Length: 413
Ligand code: ADP
Image 1 (cartoon, rainbow, N blue to C red):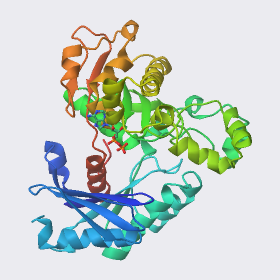
Image 2 (image 1 turned 90 degrees about the vertical axis):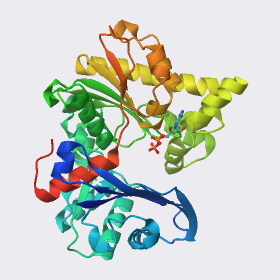
Image 3 (image 1 turned 180 degrees about the vertical axis):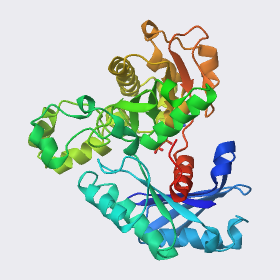
Image 4 (image 1 turned 120 degrees about the vertical axis):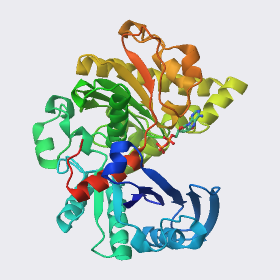
């Protein structure tokens, strides 16, 4: 089955085509046929296209909206130029899997998109006003392009965290605020967590019930999640992805009273303060230079700038603190796993985060850690009671696999 995986954002559309079916999944033999990224939708868009056997190509074109972006991608996909020999016309696309950010309390697992499911995703717009409307647009654009008969599946970022118990998901506020408005911790990066936990148990040959880990997903967005007996039991992101770790441009945890203080002192509305906390804070806000960890590490080496050093120190300190908190929350774990752009590619950040965690039983093997980028490996010493691992995430692959499983009515592992 050729599955088109779509991730529709406010001004971007990411896609991949993955050939997979139950046999591919069993043998771990799925094939990624192509991938691409349309950014700056709404103006002169930049389109990056990559096929298995061809070099990456970048072009620009005026693209109005997600629907036009999808049309562009589909025309390319079905053309000779794409070099995707498995897809000669749109009828060679057999199913579509969508990343959907918020499934609220409604969706505990991935679901085939019906009118009822679409309404459910729309009902969650209140919870994720920045994200869910774009996901809905992506689904409608695909319906328009392929017709109602094309099976579409929604894979939710929040679904994996629906196992978190109420003592961990409720905020200590008047209970009616939860009852009336569903204000609670939902957690995100669930698809990434599920994939990484799955890979860990495959590598270590464990059952789901034997999987007890803390996963640090460190990308542009960052989160830490406690997984006990294969299930999410606590996580750092909250009602929205703003809570928890220091991120590229998000503040993570802060005293909620700061919001009205900033609003008063800086003459901003609460909406403007919230936008600032999402886009101007984190690594970017502290360093004043960039949200890009790779650039920060390079600059630090070359100039030893105080604010850059501080940004990295605060980032690592918060992550270390969350490891401790989640270990306590879940009653101990067997491993800490790093994933995401920073987690997979920045050995220095991994070792800084783990510095001083020896009391937990975790000791990083410096030589082993230094050499690991973008591949699965254990990076703790052989005698560590708490192991450390790097496991690259692959959300698109899990979305493609869930799409196949949902369509065939197979249970989720
Ligand atoms: P997203 O959350 O948008 O999917 P990624 O998971 O790709 O983002 O992570 C992006 C982050 O990973 C950026 O801060 C980037 O600088 C960082 N990163 C990527 N490669 C490296 C590297 N070699 N060293 C340090 N940081 C890196």
